[in-house]
Image (tube, rainbow, N blue to C red; front, side):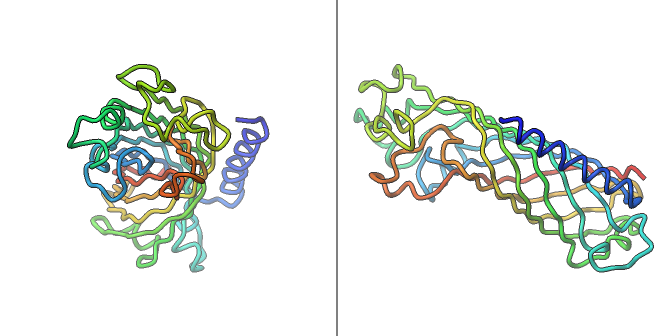
Length: 262
């Protein structure tokens, strides 16, 4: 990651914290974890076994700026929006599933079954959360209440991906499925082992449960779409293999605990 990106994030999060301090806004911190499914070039589109088989995990730390808790204003924005900054980590082991890899013993099917990937992703970014049905102030004083929300944001992602084969070295005719031997998107092959970075957009739907006056539980479903198609380590040439239409993305379910600092 370049120094410009590092400076950007340091400045951005410093600005959020400075703004909160200057306007006497409240802070919340929390943790979350849950399973995540990488929707990538591994496996077969719309195949259930590809989704179940390529399930990993995610963990994260979150910080919220709460505009309502210490405010005397009942403005709509204060009572229905929070800003969330996040540092999280995802890791997924990837394999080929579906009809193209299973139910047969041809060389191509053997090559696909022997191929394995591993994607580790560090995410840093911010989202805005919208609570449409409850005033935040009311929820904070209602133990046992639920408050649904939707969220949208942007993240910068550092990923490390590895591509290997149990049949030998990838890049050889013996071990590599033919479509991955063709150069793609500036790479010598349609597979890669690399460390790099990219952007992603993140959206989610979730709900908070008021556990007590100072803490909440949350559950949320999340979709994350990356700007790169190399996050999983596979990207067959899109000009030749037109079925490769989308960049990598993942979906997940998170369970978390949020603590109010004041």
